[in-house]
Length: 152
Image (cartoon, rainbow, N blue to C red; front, side, top):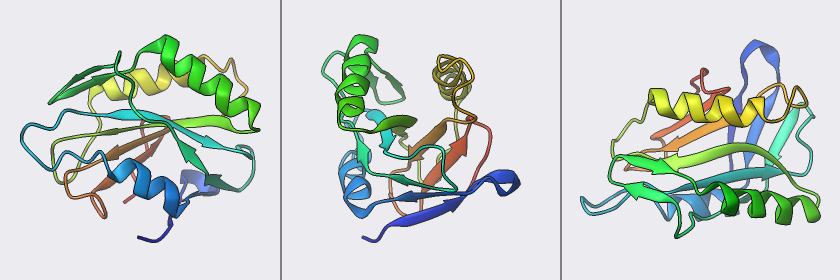
């Protein structure tokens, strides 16, 4: 698997996923009928540059709400993850999760959750990524900015 690059809208730059991050999150793709949605957060050491490199992704937590068609993160666990990553110089730049479909599209809940994360930054971030992995992984990946931009 190679790194993947996505262009952001309105010439805002690029998002580059390191290979190790892609391998990590694709482990959770819902390839079987019994697989539940999984998700976590995405981190970069330099979130305000033209080419944002995604260097880390967190795992789902056992306290997350996970069903075949829904992923709701446990907020205290997510906060601890952000604090741990921040201590290593990385900043939260987005959310990732899986969908049980080949070509995923965000639900209303997905967009609302992403917008809540972005609003929590109180204007310090211009956008927050929403990444959804489909059953087949590459190329079935949705990458959105603020939950409203689709690049495949």
